[in-house]
Length: 357
Image 1 (tube, helix red, strand yellow):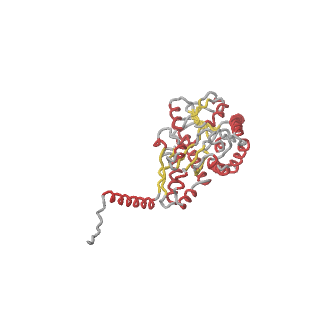
Image 2: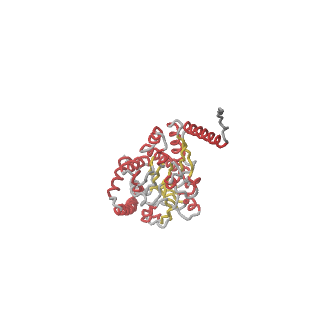
Image 3: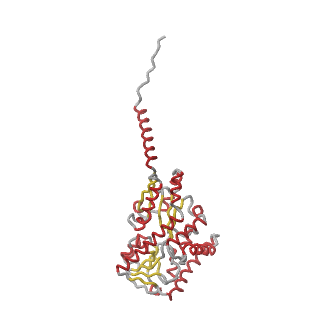
């Protein structure tokens, strides 16, 4: 018998390719582990807006630092997602990891959360935002109304005011017949009760409406006016009578998709939690309060007319505010949600966290 020596054939090209691919995957995985994860944070705010600079950028940097560079947030403005992008749907579909958006969906979609958009009392965005977070927590809204989405923070903006192109508003009677743009239907009944004609349109569309004189003015918070740069198109501003409830409230939320959160190591999840909740919400509110103060000062420096509506208008203002609340109570009752009780609880939280005293 002959002894045969056993020799191995050279590696085939395909085999070599498989080995190279495996080594490449290992190298990339190791590199990803070393350098961390990058999450996409999509926002309706312009990248150079006052709010982006005063909160979103700082928040992203804080998470980066506390995670030792392992969590990076890539802030992307909404226009890169296409005109009319629904940011709530974007995070729900897992297309974005985190979104910051003004929640302007119908109250039917978020019946309990949207109670805070009603014409209730308030003093500052900072205090009201603390109250709003407590409202979210007490009512377990993360599960009841937002599905699996993780609510990181929420804000009730500063109080809205009338910002007019030309029309002088020295009292509520001056609003009769005026076309007033608003970003949410929450203020429709309020405006109608004052004899004005509400026009519900998005923030970006308000700019065109003002420029083309298709509306006489907007009912918007000072911070939103500044963020959308609408302050360049208005010359007259009228605020509510002293002691009046807000005409309505713009509500915003910072949401994270659950898959992105679950993908994190436990210590990185803790970093996200440490930068979420009532304090983060209050910081957002503080940013809005500061932006609003600066916007008012710029208006005064430009020579715009700044009017405080007279105390004699207070009863008429309150009456206009009560009408949409009564409508909402009926709607909540029809859903089995005890509307009057919810409104009372919301007011109590605002009084606790945002009292003028």
